[in-house]
Every structure is written in C-alpha cells, then in structure tokens.
Image (cartoon, rainbow, N blue to C red; front, side, top):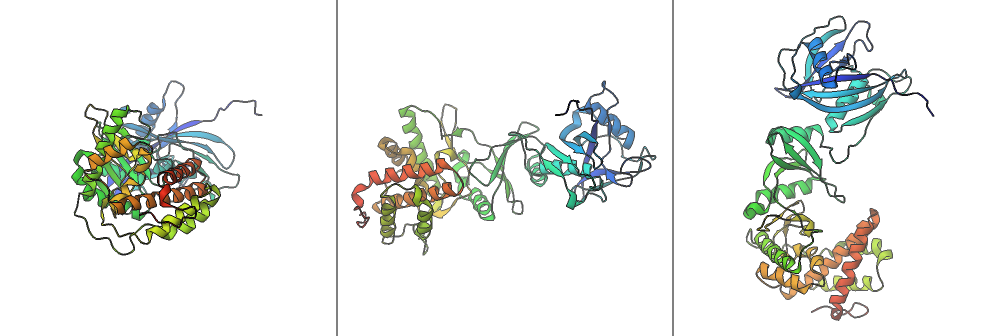
Length: 471
C-alpha cells in the first residue's frame, strides 16, 4: 500500500474549434526547443500559475500567452479529463476545454517552445501527435468525459495505434453520442448544452435527451441497424404525421449515421403508472382511439404471400425455450402453429410494431392525452400485430379490453381473434428464447406468464395433445 499522497501536476488543454469549409477544425501547435515531446503536435496547453488560479483562468491565460486569442470565461466548455502516465513513469491529470468563440487571430507567440501552429480537420489531426493529447482528443470525440491513459515503459511518446492506451471511463447518465452524432444534431437544432442517456436497457438502439442552449428539448436516436433506421424514418415521414401531437416530429435524419433528431412530446410512459380503475378504462379507450388513427392512416391493402404468422421460426424458438416451458406449453404452441396454416390472410395496414405501454406516453396535464414513440419496428402488417404485446396489459381485465375496443371503434373478427392468440404465443416463446440467450430472467418470466394466460383463456381450443384447432 502506498503511504504517499498524489502530488502530480495538473494541466489545461485548449480545444479551439471552428467551422471550416469541409467541416469542423481544431487548432494545433507543434512543440519545439528543449521541451518534452519536441517536434510533436499538441493542443495549446499549460500549467496552473499557483493555488490562486482556477482551471478556467489558467486556460484563458495560457491561450493568450501561446496563441494571442482572448477568451471570455462564459465561452469555455469542459470537454473531459485524462489521467495520464508517461512511458518514463511520471503521472499527471489534464483538463480539456472546448472553446468556439474568441477574439483575435491565433498565431505563434512563444517561438522558443512552439515553431508551428495551424488548423486541422477534427477527424484528421496532424502527425506525429503527442499520445497524451491524442487520448484527450479521442475522449472528446467519443462523447466521454474521462479516460485513463497509462503508458507502459518503452511506449512511444508520439501516438501510435499499436500502443493506444486510452481507456474511456463512462459517466453516469450523462454520456452523449459520439462527435459525429453531436455535430449532426447541432447542425439540425443548434447548440446542445446537455445530454442524458435515456436508452431502454434491453434495446440495441441508443437514445439521448438533448437540452438546447435556448431551452429547446429534443431526442436523438442512433439505430442498431439499417432496417430499424429506415422503418422509423419512413413512419415519421408518412403515417405519424396524421397523429399530430400524438407522435414526435422528425427534425433530421442521417442514413450513414443511422441517426434521427426528434421533437419531444409531452407525457410519461404508461408502463408502471398507477391509476384508478376509472382512469385505466379511460386510458385504454384512448389507446384504442390512438391505434385506430394509426391503422387508418392509409388505405388497407391485400396481404402479400408469406405474410402470415411467423411460424417459420417457431421450431428454433421452441428448442431454445424448451427447458423453461411449463408442461403442456409446447403442445399448446404446436397446436397453434398447425392452426395458423389454415387461417385466412389478413389485410395489411400501417402498424407501430411495438405497441405496448412503455411506448405510449400519457400527458400529466388535465386532458390526459396520449402520444406514441419508438417507431423503429413500424411496417405494414395486420392490425392485430399492434395488439400482441398490448394484450398482456388487459390480462384478466375484460373491462380494459372492452374500453380498448370502444375506442378502436369495432370488435375483432374471428380470424383476428385467432391470429391474436397465435401471434401472442409465438411472441412469448420468442421472448423466452431471447431472454435465455441474453440472461434476462424478466423477459423469460413474462413469456411464461403470457403462455399460462393464453392456455387458461383458450383452453377449449386445444385437446391435451394440441390436435383440435380453434374455430
């Protein structure tokens, strides 16, 4: 155990940034003379003058001494810090600050220790570059706030990919997207002053709440694949427009980044919300009306060949889920699969694709209006597709189901009722298989509960061996 306290130096680094003709640029200087890392490129930087000087004051002073620019304290933005150890063992902590507004033209002011200065593309810094400085730049570009950069004896002072020791340390709840997504967002809506990660724990897509400099609020989403990105963009450009305030608006999209910027909508997710029985019935009536607006956003169309229940994956999911199924579950599902082969095709409408309480927001205002979010699974399909996961929410509550149907404006056909049971069972088995593969016991338990409910509610439709089809 060490008995001494840290006495390592603290230094400040200036990320002076401007918009160039081909994109963002940063100011770099080349060290010269007898200083450490002479001949390598680095941010303008320096040390505190003493205990009387704070970090922002030190940055402003060093900027003036090294580059001649004048910076106001209000224009300084913290960009992160790096705990660094050099190849010879000396450690230090560097604070990195971004500045986008200043007075004066940068130029070499200390030729004894700097022999060149210039602007370089943010994503193509000059070489050779001090590895410590490169760690700060990479941390800044990644959207992280802290990184460890402990070099090993024999590592080069200059940055080399083979000796990259930068290890970002994630922040709690405040990590923003990487620099490219940040810049895409700011081009669309202006300066962002705060990022909060609001991604769902089980989803691969990432979502941030972005606070604008002038009180604006947006949501930025990066999709996990091209398909989800294309589906969500299409939905926002087509049927979501008919919902008015019942859905966010698409502000900007970037296909290469798979990113979208969305307006915020009022409300909190219904999942976990505690309501009185009367309020619940009102909410489900409104959910039915919202589903009707989605499904009537365009004219229905005939179902294409092969668009029936997803029975092709049933065998694979049953194999994965089998150790977690209750006795009789597998026979029940196999009976539904056989039944599915004889069902008539259902016409297709616009569907949300993941219509469940967590994706439906309820306004906390007196009107209690609803809005729907997360459209990345949206695509044309049978209307019943949007009732599969929603049906868990009205389990054992026929009053809520009736309230939904009243808002929806019609009852389900016999074919739709049968299809709902089949799709809900297949979705449950798929969820169990996914939960097993990804170590998610809650998802496994939800699937088991759904199968138990379906078997109880639809017992007359199946013999003990699953031979009798539901009519």
